[in-house]
Image (cartoon, rainbow, N blue to C red; front, top):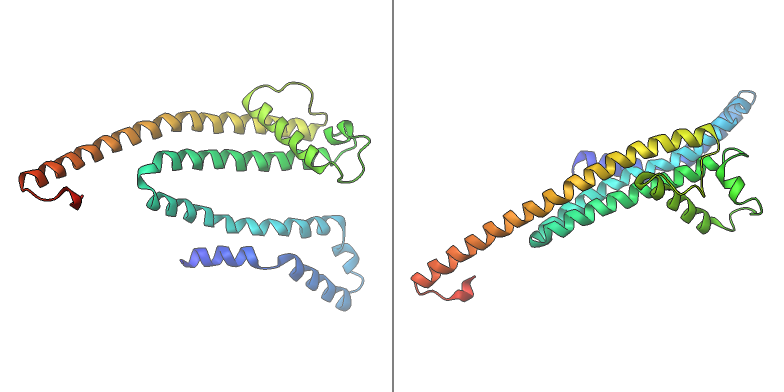
Length: 211
């Protein structure tokens, strides 16, 4: 494990939220008047933002893909395709969560309009599927019009999601033919080398079990 990997793991496991809460508690004892300003809404939002530190641990996925490459060299084509598909699914998940969060920040957002009778998180799975559906219809087509952006923040998100979707699918469409061609060339070279080895063993009357 490199020092950078250790640092990323450390950043991912440290309880920043608990540390900050402990620090604010200490400040409330030492400076009781200034603590009211610290415990404002922005500071509470910062506490929630501390959870994103766990994303540092995602660097393990890079090591996982590298291990899979070495374990299945002949299946590298499918490993590359699985990696691209995983990237697409993960990006769509992040966009879906962002779209849902933006929709809950305003009374005119899409969440309040579609789920007027919903109370709390009793329909969380349906809301997530709706967010995921909207993201895919936005980054692949122009949408179907059943879920639309109602606020300025939602429209800005749609613009960036469309740009990101165009870039992502452009990379995807360009990468798949390259992966297929590269694998075809690799298979041809492997077949040629295997044929040469078999001819060499046959000329020297060696057992083909050595292959």
